[in-house]
Amino acid sequence: MFSEKMQQAMNQQVNAEMYSSYLYLSMAGYFEGKNLPGCARWMRMQAQEELMHAMKIHDFIHERGGKVKLTAIEEPPGNWESPQAVFENVLSHEQKVTGLINDLVDLAIQEKDHASNIFLQWFVTEQVEEEASADGVLQKIRLTAEAPGGLFVIDQELGQRTMACPCGQGRV
Ligand code: FEO
Image 1 (cartoon, rainbow, N blue to C red):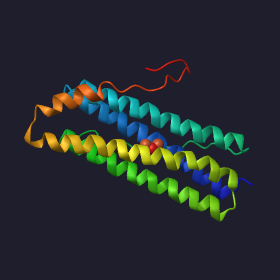
Image 2: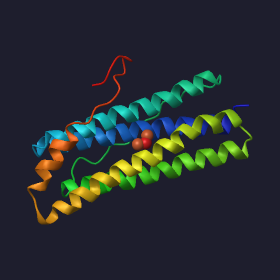
Image 3: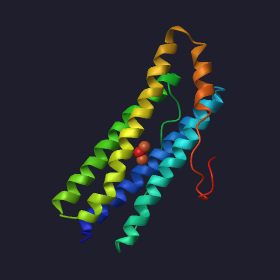
Image 4: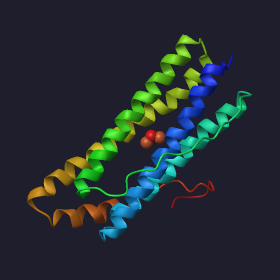
């Protein structure tokens, strides 16, 4: 059974995923301003992915016969000290989201809501990937501290990022 408590928690997670999307879009804007189009593209894709995460939960709430309640999205920061600080923020944010997903799994277990538990396992796995990818970029950026030209190379690399097109046909 899809309890009121579970429904509320899932709705909060829709908001958290929307905030993630907002945060990464703000980071994309930061990189556009720094003339790092590859980093900006990476962030735009990240923002799109977060939107898909939000929609996945949104649709699950409906499937379970629940009601989606959209709430105000907090304003994200608009500036960072450096590209490295941005990716440190990405990693810490993803670690925070992992904690939120883990709390949801705990609640599903507590509520004996097996369907929610199974549904959430996709997010548990996704968070491992999200943290690893943020950490991977961060490690590389740290290396550029002594070789600033390296940031140019990283920008080129991040600009290659693609994702499945939301239309379901091919990649963008
Ligand atoms: Fe939806 Fe990046 O976690």
